[in-house]
Amino acid sequence: MPLAPSILRVLPPWLLVPLLCLGLGSCGSKEEADTSAEVEEARSLPVARLEARDTVLTRDYVAQIQAVRNVEIRARVPGFLEQIYVDEGQAVRKGQPLFRINDAEYKTRLARAQAALSTATAQARVARLELDRVKILTEKNIITKSELDVARANMRAAESRTDEARSTAKNAALQVSFTTVRAPFDGVVNREPLKVGSLLDNGTLLTTVSDTRQLYAYFNVSEMEYLEYTKTRRQSAKGGDVVRLVLVDGTLYTPPGKIETVESEFDASTGSIAFRARFDNPKKLLKHGATGKVRMSNEIENALLVPQKAVFEVQDKNYVYVVDQKGEVKRKSFVPQARVSAFYVVKEGLEAGDRVVCGGIQDLRDGNRITAQPVTMQSMLASAP
Image (cartoon, rainbow, N blue to C red):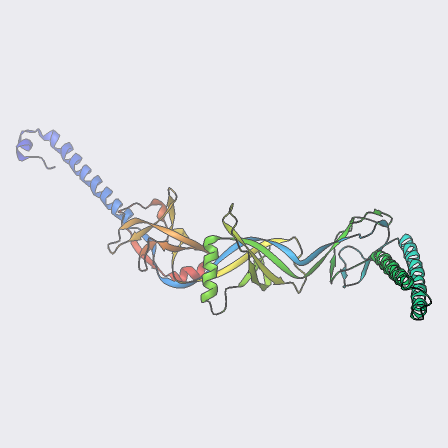
């Protein structure tokens, strides 16, 4: 504030110079502060205009990998393990011998059963001859019909004994065949916990055989993502069943797989539903029991993308700074639908054409002015990891 002329007249000269300097100094400081504030408010920051575009949304799901066929090989008869024909990790063909159990006892039983069958067969033949003889004598009224009935009963009894002996012989032969354990299909032999000379019980685990030419990947999907998958599958001309597998080292497995089945109900505890995808394994890279991530892709039409570096959170809500035509920024909340690479897919809260600040948002406040440095969404998409 300038000094009044009346005051200047009454003040002594030696006080005028300091007062004038004080006034000029305070005015200079205020002007410098205003200038620095304007410079700070008008700093240049990158600004992008939001655009709606068709986007492929990818999601990864932890998956358990299992062989299409993986079975336990168990002993079907007790005995001593006499020989092992294959080594762990060896590829085998269907019907190839894997193990042999000592069969001396079972061959003895088979021989006894075959002898009993021969005896029963001979007795049945004798009974038939006797029946034929009694029929002739009955027709000539030499013997009574009651003796014919007895002969027929003896014939039926002899045939029953023959059937029983035949069944016993077949079972004995089957027991002998069980002493040689064979591969049920083409596959790979896994761990062999027992060695030659081990005593086996009925049902003792010998090994497992896995058919790894194709494998299943089981993974769980939330209800919302399941609905997105169903919608994409109906609308996509190429079909929405194709998925990729990401291995534990982060590499993308080839060839791609295909979703085959979806379970019929959601898990009440997790709210998810189980999917099963099939993958070919021509190079035998995948193994039964491995883990990985199944990557599903859904096409979203007219998706609105926001760079992740433009977003900040306040009390679990997502915000961006929107710039108006005057360069003034204002905080605006939005609801994300999903994340794609370094971007959020907007569900609601923002519109195409909104200009958002894409960098240096840490020190911004509502009402600050900036100089917009335009950047295109195309360039940010191209530089996204």
